[in-house]
Image (tube, rainbow, N blue to C red; front, side, top):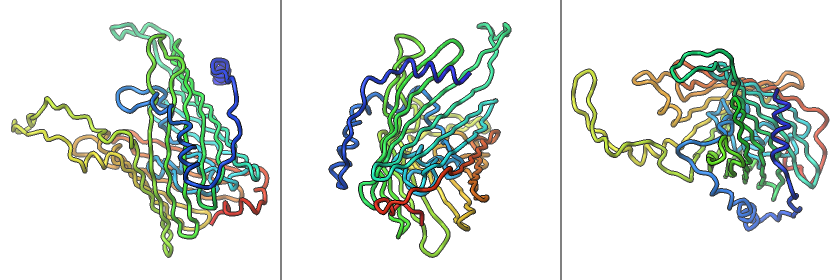
Amino acid sequence: MWISKISSLYTYIKINHLISRFEMVPNIKNIILYFGILNPLWFFSQIGGQNSFPILNYPTSARTEGLGGYAITVRDGDATLGQENPALLNREMHGMVNLNYINYFADANFAFTSYTRHFSNIGTFNANLLYADYGKFEYADMNGVRTGGRFFANDLAISFGYARPLSEKWSVGSQVRFLGSFYESYNAFGISFDAGVNYYDTTNGLGFSFLAKNMGSQLKGFTDDIKVPLPLNLIVGVSKKLEHAPFRFSLTYDNIQRFNLIYFDDSQTSTTDPLTGEIMEIKPPSIVKKFMYHITFGTEILLSETLHIRIGYNHMQRQTLRVGAKPGMTGFSMGFGFKVKKLYLSYAFTKFHIAGTSNQITISKRFGKVPDSDVDSFYRQH
């Protein structure tokens, strides 16, 4: 089924020309130019209201999920991170094949696979596919009476990424995604772009990234007269590995383009306590509360080269999905990763709601050897 949908997506999206090659020079002017090329596409996207292609918001690796949903700063040999931030693609990811499975709620399942290849003195390339199956649905009339028969709902994203170094510590990368949504007899197609810049100092264990995600537009909506924007997300992140302790901490601030992410009805100034009948004043959200809605914390405990434990916390997720006075572990995620011979295994679970947990498994294996290159030697893991 999904093979025919890839064919439909490929037929719809025609590439008329290729972007000409250009050489990147390691200075800040070229970083600005790199983002400036894609800058006009930013205006096709916005946050708020309804967004198309929700598949763009799902983490595609157990490592990312275990860290709260964001892992955009650490440049190592984990090729799944190149999907989150294309600037992290590097030679240590050469030959890596990744398979990822996500078990969501109500029979929704996600599958992700990618392949990464590095070419000395050229850069690192990545191709990946993300497929979402939202399960089976039964037909019903306007009164909710089931009429028999079933239909399916699926999303598909095919991506191609590229990154290259500007210097020993700086790198840039970009990614293009071809998108398709197939809901019953309705189809929608789109294209999105990611562009990132990464600074990573292996000596001090310090990483910093800026990422522009989901720039682009619907090319065809579900109806001829309506096109829904993509979920644009401008993100900045920083991470630090402690020098004398096996901890790496990360802090991510997302949705820079809009400060207030909290819904607040200005016309509702008070409410009634359902138990006591007391009138309670409703105050608008404070600046601190608005700020915290952008924050995600992540911690990696590096017990050894073959065993890592991960813990994450997403504040907005906890505030928007918790149930009353019993939030439980909503907004928290945990996971681990370990190496068995030449196979890398990772697992993570996220508590989205008191009644629902997401499970994610990632399997990675390298085929071939990492190419030797004196020019790219700074990409070796530390």
